[in-house]
Image 1 (cartoon, rainbow, N blue to C red):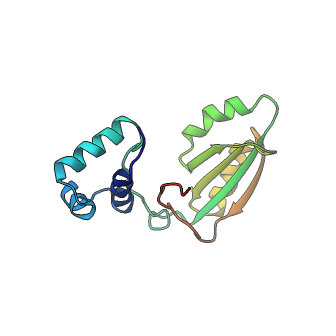
Image 2: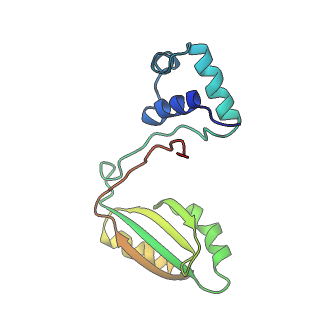
Length: 148
């Protein structure tokens, strides 16, 4: 399913506020509420829209640190790590990547002691590098149509 200009406008509305009513989206894009609902349903069925989620502030939820941790897995430890990483509550995003490191994780932690404990769990799988996030420069940017 190709995303036409109207679907992009609907996606823009949903990305800015996924709780926006179909009636309000319809007003903003110039079609009826049932037409909006039908287009949204088709995009959900085509898995263009993958889901809806509440974004929680880690800092307001008592996490004091956000970090980016890369892992270069030891020989034979990548597959066990890929199975284990899903069980870590600290990990909010994890990517398998190309290059010298195999994994990049975005993690939230209560404090430095928690960071130390978490790294101790990771080092059985490989060599880690940690960077503490100071602030967001770009956060949850909308996905927009590509320009020719």
